[in-house]
Length: 390
Image (cartoon, rainbow, N blue to C red):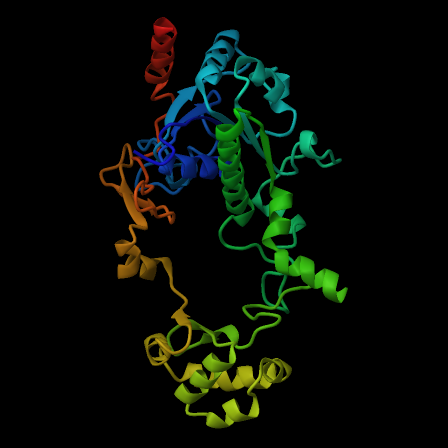
């Protein structure tokens, strides 16, 4: 029994932000019914595949964020399918969608309509620019993806090397961070309903979320009046806090407080640096010269040697490839690589596990992603049985 096993979620989301949010709920035990448009979620066909895209039901993109859900295919423009959807709304706890603002209203299935069928429903939307219900702007109705949100929200301007172009982060934080915040909002709404009996509308915008994500840049702008920009792997107010090239890769060192700095200087056999630059202000003022000292020292060592010398004394770690992550005993001990079936392939695949750990109701991925419309008879049959019982 998961912590959310009493909740049913109707998931009308696609691509990444919405599915990631509902995946978190599914991992924690919620019954997530993925309601897919005709033809299914647009990322079902996205690579990578194990072997043959024509044989495999979906690629890794879809598998990774839709595990543990049930799927039914509905055309909300069709009267019969619309009626089936509304029948599910009557018994649901939560509805989550990530269409453009106004899309659900075109089908007369917006929040206000759904409350006529279930007055306590929690209705959540994930959009690029939010919903007019929570703050109307000229951007609403515009399409948005992770790249758009990172560009507008300051992430790209503050990511990358100082002499390089604005750069997106590797992971899709515009989607993933927004999804996580939306999940928090939904669970807060569930708690509120438990106390008051009232459902509500939850709205999380990607642009808003990226402003929250870039919190440091926001306060820097306010405090200094200067627009923060790219600093590579360094930190504006901490040093050393950076990546350094080694003989066989890169490693990071975070020795910005006085004690860690003294320990680092001891490991480097450079007590003179500890004596000459004892405070944070000293180190920040002379960061360029000190960076060169550290860079020369690191380059003479392998990753293992550098991390081994600092381990237990100074925060340090190698910059790992995914191949190294797969070989890391810590990752396996924490169940962070989960095998799931890949329909149409001759072997299982591994996807990222859940980082939320709980002592009594430990979340876990609950099986592979669904085939398109795989659970139609099961889900709609349950509704028919509930109606007959009533």
